[in-house]
Image 1 (cartoon, one colour):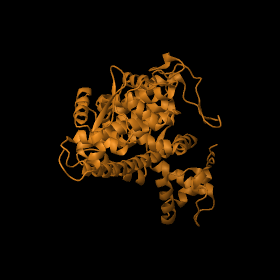
Image 2: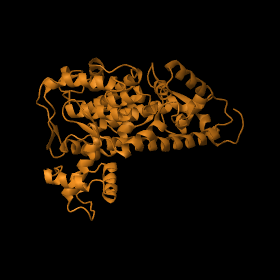
Image 3: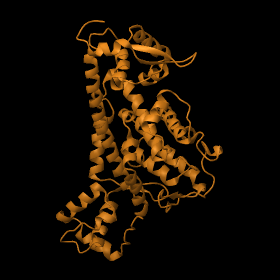
Image 4: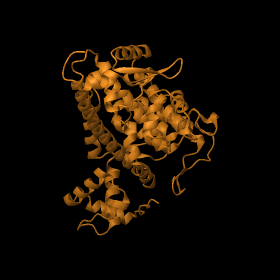
Length: 438
């Protein structure tokens, strides 16, 4: 249960106005706003000049009203821009995109391999947030080997992966109702109770958002009659470069996420579609590094905070600041996670390549062998290699044939049409022998 903030009286606001500007108090207010704390945390903050928690809350509210920079045309959703938000957006600009972005963080030769792994992880985690129960290991095997989904959870993950690839391919398009419905249809294919709800806006109002554990109703979305107008406003908001007032693209992407979640224009799949549209808008605006980030993994690991950030806003006059502050933190965490992941993979690859330095192979063939260094009991198919390395099936098969010919891999027939490959008799010899050309 989310605690409701106290209602502020005219005397509370008058007192806040008289205290506003006090340097000591403003330092406390800025700290509260940078963290975008909710009433349940603010009430424990103290200052000698402030008589009680309600007085402090009035000051916080006053400061946020002064900093208000945007309000959605309907529903009262509003944004107060803080120093911290602007600072994080600047850091993201320097790290995520543009000609000055951190291109050096992604090794050029391995960029496609990192990309496919990131897209898979994002698809898996986004589905897990919505209840998919498949493990990461099983889900990745399904995607890499292009195995047909065997359960609703696997279908959700497969759909998410296809939808994310669709976004990457259509990132330069303008947002339209048709694009939104296409994306939702890809997300929900064969996962809804009624297939007719796939790729369609909801027509009824018998929908609520409930706490998964307690069953408590935490959100009543707007009426279905308002969806058409909302979608028109959303497309206009996404497509206009600068409206009445400039809003940083990263914050606009988060607002799109928030508003889809708030309006709930679909019977199901709202969360997945909202995160996908956030992802699309980031890529559309040049934040190319977003496609390498597993943003949903960070959200999944902090799911209670994700949900609270939305509920705090709804309980506090539909203030999007809580949700925006949380999601900016998620982007920071995802970027740090990417850096750590790549450093780890570079180290692993260097160690593997040192062992294979005298073997006459291409970079990609060495990469294929490195999978077996990591997992000696691995079984690969040509299809899986083509997915991992983002090459055509014939190219993958050609690389495998070279490795089989050198006895570094061994072909094991599965049936008359398909083979799998395990490490061959020369593999361990190569990994253990002193430097010499083979």
